[in-house]
Image (cartoon, rainbow, N blue to C red; front, side, top):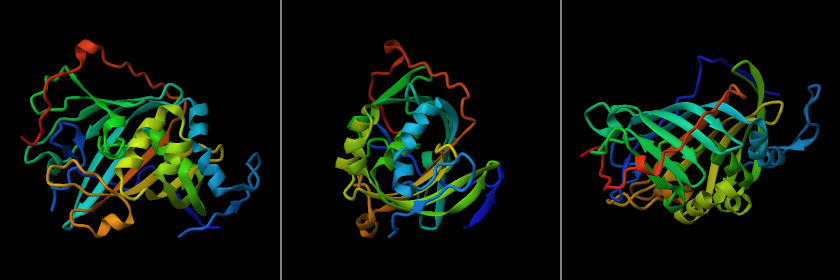
Length: 304
């Protein structure tokens, strides 16, 4: 069985581009820069789960996270076009029981134009995304609220980071997966799985809190299949997952499509979204904005 060691200082560099659609939602901007088989696995370690298939372990990942309470989070999105790579990186914490999270996103210069953009704070909730320091004329003390069930991609990539629990919920749609091997991740032994998940299937079996966003994504993406790499520890907790989406956009930025067929269409770009979970049990204090703190005016593009 393959074993690889990855330390704290050796992390995948996964990146993405962010912008704003004309409707005012933070979204992936494509104009900013020019078969596996199901495998049954036996855990040979003491206390491990014996003879659990790869698909079964991945289907359970979201439920295991909810039972784990909370953790710290690192997120990264990456895209490359015309030989240029652009990334959005985030860090924060997430409460899986309450389905609430807080992230601080660092945007690259290329994603927002020539000038540096201050970090954006995002609050993640069931069916909603709140952003502060959004720019584009929005007061710094105000939040922008986005209904994630009304975004074509269900906010899988639009906000610059995939909601950590939604990333795990996507694995409920796995049809085929295989065990790549065991690796060391942040000092722990994890199992590396690779496979294909189906957004529509995940939406049908998702928990209530994730269903609306995944249903929107299933409608918005032309092709519902998404390839992934996932890493589970000995307790079945998802420690890292990387989904590879293919997105495209009209000139107005409002159409989002995905899947293998989209790669050949004009304007289609691959986006890799990675979510890393660690320090389980760390407090995740998230207080949602009051109605008076939410900006209700017109939201423009931060590039203008």
